[in-house]
Image (cartoon, rainbow, N blue to C red; front, side, top):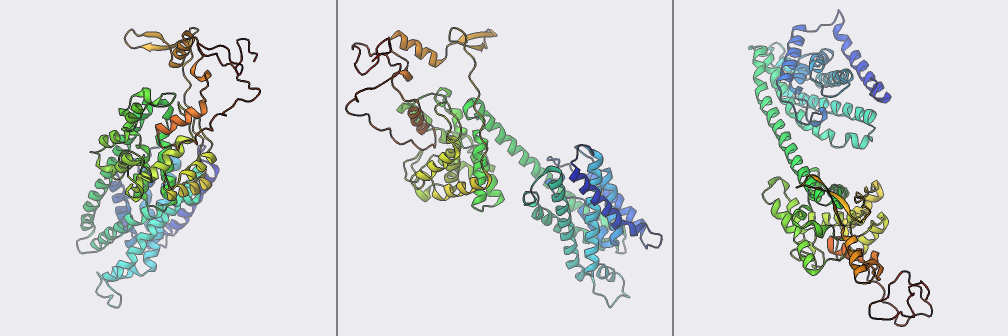
Amino acid sequence: MRAVPLAARVYILGAALLSALCAAPAVCPAADVPWPAVGLLAALAVVWGSALPRLPLGRAAAGPDWCGPVLLAGAFLLPAPAAGLVAVPAALLGPVERRPAGVRRLWRVARSALAAYAASYAFGLGGGRDALAASHVPAMSGCPGFPHALAPAVGAALVLGLTSAALEGGVLVTAEGRSPRLAWRGRTLCSLVPHLAHGLSGLTMAVLWRSPYGPAAALLALPPMYVCARVFALCHQERAAHQATVRALVQAVDIKDRYTRGHSERVGRASVMIARELGMGGDRIEALRVAGVLHDLGKLGVPTRLLRKNGPLTPEERRVIELHPEYGHEMVRGIGFLGEARDAILHHHERLDGSGYPHGLAGADIPEAARLVAVADAFDAMTSTRAYRRARPVPAAVEELKRCAGAQFDPRMVDALTRALDRHGWPTPAAPPEPRPLTSAGRRRTADPVRGEARERTPDHARGRARGRARGGAPECARGRAPDRASDHASDQRGNVPPAPPPAPPPTSPPETVSVPDAAPQAGRGPSPWRPGPGGAA
């Protein structure tokens, strides 16, 4: 138990001791326990557990406990201490996929035994055991018959699911350090719904067990549950394949442009934050996460030089960039499981005032998923560094979203993101990879795929400096271009980032003294009295 935190060790040992105390009355000499029935049900649980398909997620909390029908049949037929013992062999002999195996086996034994004990106790407390016995014993005419056992059976199934969910949440809090709200969120409902079906199957097994045909007839209730388990496993495999498809598409976009690496996942995370703040359901949240992750898929059809261009785009280049939503929509048109994510991919660059692209939709005509993803996309684009501009702080990005709310962005989505950021914060994105070092000649060494050796490549900015020196002038950034304003303008043409306010016009008349560093004289003109000369003096 060295790899398990101390709090989790105490929790698991406490659960194991409690389960042992609950089962202790069954092993007392004076206890009236039908041991043949306990042995048969325990063996059936072992065989049934080994025959079930393995879930692809490999986590006990990923799906329902498919031994539930056998455990509930034991809870209906046996006293509470003996019902807890039915779950022990299957929990001990079941496969363990992660270490430490001994601790995990002990935990499964304690959890299953406590849940079965609680279900059997609740069934007996509700009078279900007497009603079940009266349905096959004519002498017990004073007791209600089989129909009166349905309500206690449903209650016992709910108790089994609630106990398992509560114990699982506790071990997640102590072992993984999760908050109680996150540990139990969604786990209760996922446990109750399958166990209701298990309760009916377990009651059917118990009725057939007590029938004149004996325990062999009880096996007739298991084949339908096997079919359900098989379908459940296939659904998990299909969902895993969907997630693998989405990851592969995202990886292709990240490989194309190193400056946007991680951007898709962050937009998906911000989309989930907005959706949860708006109170959307689980399936809708997952669809919006996928929409945020795949929103830039169409950039696979855009030339890489345009995505990495360090400067404003020409009108022709802008038209090429604006085709990427339609490219992405065409790529995912035939993928049925994406649902409304396809609309978000196509329309996430639309604006509320109708000036967006590709279709110029306005207001409520823009799908809600697209309005949500547009806010998430713009927020992450502003708070991460790109090839054409630096990252902005989170407060500045939020203020920019608020400034553009109503014209470009949906104010409802902006408010939801603001509240989510105030509650959960936002991690700082990692800086993009640094460019490879240059050689002494200003060239970058790259691998030649044809010759199989390294060759030297002159980067774009080095060629620009060389052309500037050949023309007798200064490089572009030294000839008076403001890098920050130019990069803001480029960001406006590259995505959902709001445009920066226009720069203030230059003064009409020069001041008395002006100091402009490192500005080269223009060709064909003499040294201006307002510019420094070759020696740096005005």
